[in-house]
Figure 1 (cartoon, rainbow, N blue to C red):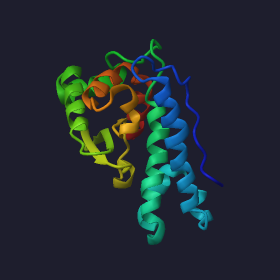
Figure 2 (figure 1 turned 90 degrees about the horizontal axis):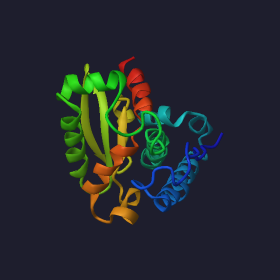
Figure 3 (figure 1 turned 120 degrees about the vertical axis):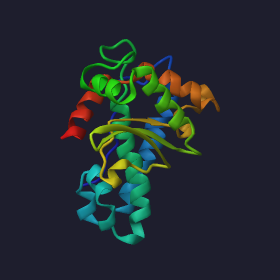
Length: 207
């Protein structure tokens, strides 16, 4: 069974004006599709790997043959990261999209960071400082929320962690609209965060 490109759960223009439709077309149809194609090529001779869910593939990289492990790590990460990323955003103006968090994640943010603005500042600063391409992540580990960044398409799944929220800071995620102004993109992105999806992922992370 081949890996497939997950469809966007909303229209390409649904995140306007914060993320433009042209960026979404390139990001989803070109970049995400390329990761899917490359992952399928990497596991073409390994039907047991092709049959796995992509998240499980990343959780078990040590079992992937060494000659294709880097390709699976990079491209499997690209597939899994984007699959989650699209769902962690939602159409502007929709219920529970943008604004302050709701539900259990809101309570946990207050508990661990004091307030939402402090949390948001910490997340943005950590992610803005990621050198080169990569991602910013919100994790729940050892009973607390933790913010980290990783390079390239590396996923916390490979470290046994389940990401609750993430933002893509590869240049293709923002350059058409924001050019080199990564902090401006990070600030605008909060307007499209889907807090209902964040809460669903938080429930999984807590177990």
